[in-house]
Image (cartoon, rainbow, N blue to C red; front, side, top):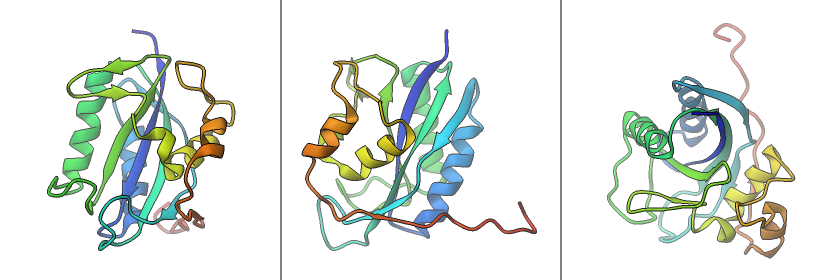
Length: 170
């Protein structure tokens, strides 16, 4: 299988969310048949759904992968599980959420996976990190992410400073 550009949404609002996302990016870079092309800055945003939970930290990763969509999804869910993800409440708090947002130019509609992600047009905390990665990115139907971002409701995004690297551990 030829390598495909895949874009992964990252989110967390429990257990040191910025560290959760940074560790998730490292795990994504280690996937078989996969190269991490880039990662976006992280953003703080209000939760979607129940408001009685901490703000989220979100970002995105750009992968070039030879993995099939469902195989990639299996790996994403395994990374979530390794980070203690529990699916208790819809749109509730979580240690790690990894969403396959875009997979090449494919439109996928299945029982386990829908790509592009159906909520993508409504989520500035997903659209902005995607724009940071690739300003000319478009969905399979030709809709530009930049156009969706202009129409998207504001979720009071706050761009975060990068996590400083420890000079003693790399």
